[in-house]
Image 1: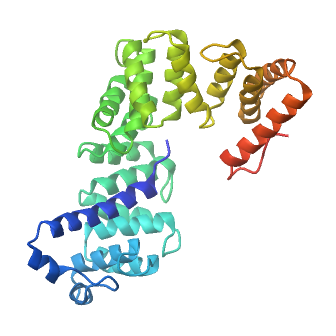
Image 2: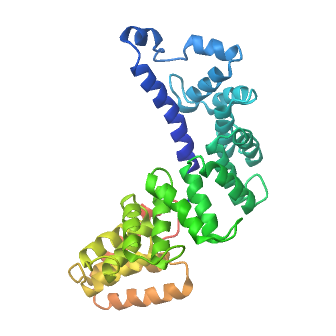
Length: 356
């Protein structure tokens, strides 16, 4: 799973702005008029407090530069003000400064510095920084890779209710990395975030569904697998969409419904899941849940063959693609090949390789 670091940090910054806005809305009208900052520039009183050494004010000025509120966005100035506050022990500033070093925004990218500032905030009990520090240990960024340390920091954040940390700790128990493999503990932590929603919940819902599907840490229950995969699929989690489509296809844990199978497989196929591209192609080839359509079958087989990294699997998919091609006129075949190239251009902008 992608850690969604930038999303999470942006969420924290915006949350601070939202809290301020709500507080402002609760003030009497006369006080609101007196307390509103100018549309441009930073409130002189706030700036004066920051310059006098007030850590809270310094962190707030850094936040304003970070998000470009009232002033042009300037990560370098944000980093400067965050540092002033962070050196005084301000937890938020330490965490935000760690993030700027991780991203290389306003400062040279430096994972060692990111670790140092996240650690300062984490040791003061900041759950977000504990989670981020766990991730840095997990991936060996700025520190030697250490799954046990990753698990220790994730646990500190997880017990405080941090959803990403709960998912990550569950994943470590699932894989037996840094902790003894324990499916029951994995399911426990997955369920925590899966039930409460938020960042990381879709991944946890998929993982929990997978554990029910295989009977890991709990009795095997296909109905529960469908339940959790549906929740993840509705959030756009591609693997869950594919799994849900397969369950509808097989009538496993849910009444067999080829139309629903096509619907969910298509969602996953459009997110570049080769297995579901193959499966969707087969449904078009056989006319299950959709009118039989060899051109559409060829299109999805073509995409899967071009995307599948496993050589033996690619050979099998290529065989299916070529079999579908025997049902197409040359003009139809050319049309679908061009359609596939156009699809790749739209969906793989960051990847120059396209089907030949």
